[in-house]
Amino acid sequence: MSDVLLSARGLTKRFTTRGPYGRRKEFTAVDGVSFDVRPGETLAVVGESGSGKSTSARIVAKLMDPSAGTLEFEGEDVTRATGARLARYRADVQVVFQDPFSSLNPRHTVERILMAPLDYQGIAPTGGRRAHTKELMERVGLNPDHAQRYPAQFSGGQAQRIGIARALAVNPKLVICDEAVSALDVSVQAQVIDLLLRLQRESGFSYLFIAHDLAVVRRMAQRVAVMSNGKIVEQGPCRQVFDAPGDPYTRTLLAAIPRINPEWDRRRRAAAG
Ligand SMILES: Nc1ncnc2c1ncn2[C@@H]1O[C@H](COP(=O)(O)OP(=O)(O)OP(=O)(O)O)[C@@H](O)[C@H]1O
Ligand SMILES: [Mg+2]
Image (cartoon, rainbow, N blue to C red):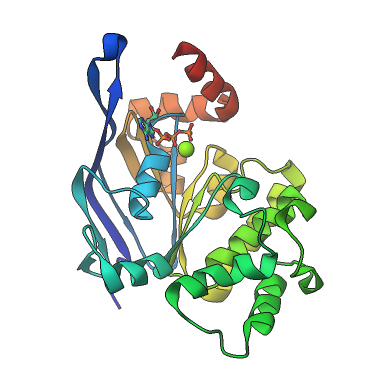
């Protein structure tokens, strides 16, 4: 088995925005980002708001094409994958988003939501849909009797468990968590982190774990990449990066991160236009 599951090299994403007087402006949100994720490990990505974490995640999830750079998965170039190769990648790489309610279809029952990834892959679960749904719900600590309920009938923490169960439905090799526990209350957050750790122990997949809370990162990840202005300024084992940051910029950044409230920052950026 290869010692690298996912390898990103020089990932770059440029957006064209409209400046004053409708002038087109190029903006580089992700700028030559390279990292590896090994089988069964968790790589955390931290960095200030707007540093390009989610954009990088979207590229890795193939929700968005990079402007430049390559993505290798299990030693195979998947940057421009299409057809069956892309479908397989979409099964191997799953995403859990920050807001469970906006990422779950409100008009679908839990069973339909959990079966959607299998339906997309054209897989019929052995043992049937009901049994597979029940098993997934039990794995994430949900009451399987609630399979015919709708997302709005669950709490935030429970809804996030549905999102996690959906990610697990097709046995992924990599699960991308983009601030997946950030919106949850502290006590619920701790439970969901325990769940994420247990699921990884049971199934052996890798996480690409985006978070701004360094205490959470320390619990979840073996390695961490620090992003600033679209670039990775430092990466390495958590202990090394957190306890003895090599980059002076990382030190400043790490000192500032716990105090940054992303929601507050988003509003500030929105207000600044
Ligand atoms: N579709 C888009 N079009 C134009 N600009 C975009 C687009 N998506 C993201 N950006 C910009 O790219 C930059 C990086 O955004 P991104 O969402 O990746 O940051 P982030 O690190 O995830 O931030 P946060 O911690 O707030 O979630 C931001 O300046 C953002 O405004
Ligand atoms: Mg983000």
